[in-house]
Amino acid sequence: MARQKVKLQYIENNTNRKVTYKKRSKGLQKKAEELHILCGVDVCVIVYGPYDKDPVVWPISQAEAVRILLEYRSRPEMEHTQRKFSQEAYLKQSVAKSKDKYERLLMRNREVEMENLMVDLLCGKPMQQVPYNDIGDLTWVIEDKKRSVRHHIEMLEIAAGNAPAANLAAYQ
Amino acid sequence: MARQKVKLQYIENNTNRKVTYKKRSKGLQKKAEELHILCGVDVCVIVYGPYDKDPVVWPISQAEAVRILLEYRSRPEMEHTQRKFSQEAYLKQSVAKSKDKYERLLMRNREVEMENLMVDLLCGKPMQQVPYNDIGDLTWVIEDKKRSVRHHIEMLEIAAGNAPAANLAAYQ
DNA sequence: CGCGCTATTTATAAAAA
DNA sequence: TTTTTTATAAATAGCGC
Image 1 (cartoon, rainbow over the protein chains, first blue to last red):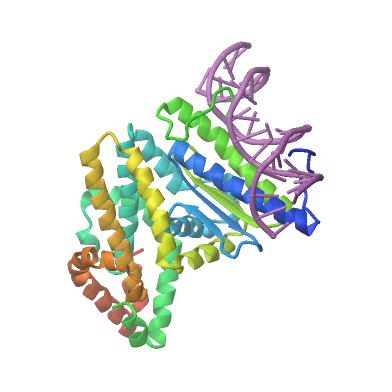
Image 2 (tube, chains in turn red, purple, green, orange):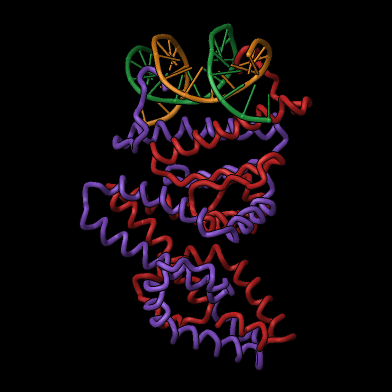
């Protein structure tokens, strides 16, 4: 985009491609950081190139990113196109209620808390111990996690059929 | 970056922030796509904001992204610390006006962090990877969780010995 | 290879419609 | 409000060291 306009196609020349990669991936990171700071949104950029040995992962927590991606992957292809994510709809609704930054932070914490609560439930916490006020917020997490829960169950069944004691010891 | 240079800080005005968000997230997508095409590298951008109901997940395969992120998760603690730093800096900036609430939030965040760490340990993360400074704060969380962990183990043993599917189905 | 250096192209903040 | 239009800030392709 400078001395000469470049066609939007794979750069065949190895040297030029690497140079462009370095410049542009740096630029992409900067843009992501600016968006993060200016608008207070979580942004995660992963550049998985053959040049840098490490993929760049920035700046939201990797756990959160994994959660998003696992969920996204578990959706039928049709929904990918339509971009219907009940979870995100919930987030939008929730965040819309926030009038200031403090509340936005609360929302973020709430989100993490619901994740943890769900993990507790997956690990066997009795549903009766869940505070009533949490049920509503928890619902969307659970709904979106059903598929992964089934996966958990499969894993546990495998453990049960093979070497349960050894497998379970790892959890202590 | 136009009629006037904009300071790199959270945009307080709701309208401006939303407008900027829309423009810049679109721009970020474009940049990511260009990098992907020009250099033949996998790029994944996730924008997890309160405006669009959907997180933008683009364009590499989700399986690949998950693999990358899981890899990242297993990396040395030092790099995580750096990330936490920028996150904390961001949080600090965001709630500068309500210091008391901020302090409490930090504690809450710390608590949540410890819970996450504990989950990692339960899942087999080596204790040697836990930063020394975290041990103290972690202790009370673990003490608090021992009972549920035991319950967890009981559940798993029951599942292993009896009818796992039936027991676990209740948690869906 | 990596760092500067422009000439240009892009991105975009603010204004106008 | 959203869209379109500028004017200006940023990003960057090609080159030279």
